[in-house]
Length: 401
Image (cartoon, rainbow, N blue to C red; front, top):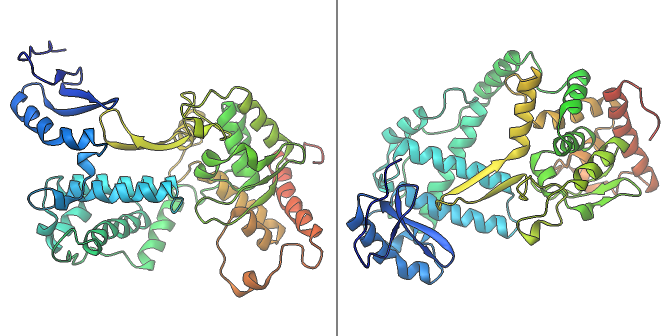
């Protein structure tokens, strides 16, 4: 490691071990340039310190307060700040923010961080599309295209640019291409993206307590990554084994009967749960060993937005270790497995309700509860569905719930 440089007397910045010249302001370390760029770092510090002292992040200020053309990086910062506000307001969920963050990172890499937004045209978007990872499915590329266009539409609607961006052929692929891509990926995964009962039991046997509890919530209740990460303790009745928790993505309310195995796994995970880093996270059922939510986003120590999904990471590691992994298999396979097996009951209305699917059909509008004229029958239908999946998973080796 290079020795830290000596700095002039009275120089306001210090040499951080990361190779940057930095200063701690309002309890946070800010970085202004490389060790060998003392003058440029000082100029940047003098330009930004008043905004920082005022409690504002100069990287996220409206581009109209900056000189020159709006760059791709500047637009992404402003857009992500807006999306973070939507998360804080409960308008979108963590997972959606994570996808927008990934979109902006891909955009900055493909188009160039310092490229002027108004210089982008159809030819540049051809290059951006060519910069998408080659292993992406067509549906994934379509999603990235939609989100990328959303970023630029935000700039146009908020008058951050003088003229609309022209995308040319930067459009989503047709349904036929999506279908062919899905079939090809399905074939590569052996035709299925769900789990067999044997593989599910094998993974549950080797999973750590928290991952095991999350997996059982996926298999028992159709929960996904964000569902598990945001599940509050208050949503679970530990005596009756019912969980009542709206799906964060859609807001659709869900009421599900927990298997004894699921409740036991949750209680075991809670018994070793660390103290939360932030008091507001104390109500969550699951926390990482560092005391943070399992699906998390925020600012890194270097001031850049980041996010991680420990459920997905740990599940993928487990499947690779156990030799179960194949393309298309992830933690969401637990949710796919529930949908597939629960469908064997021929009670799709209840399966949809448990999954939290948004259904705007006329039948859904007119239906007054799952129990018909007898409200108590709704719980019986739910128990019948989840018990069917339980019997499938354990091959009838367990007793009645």
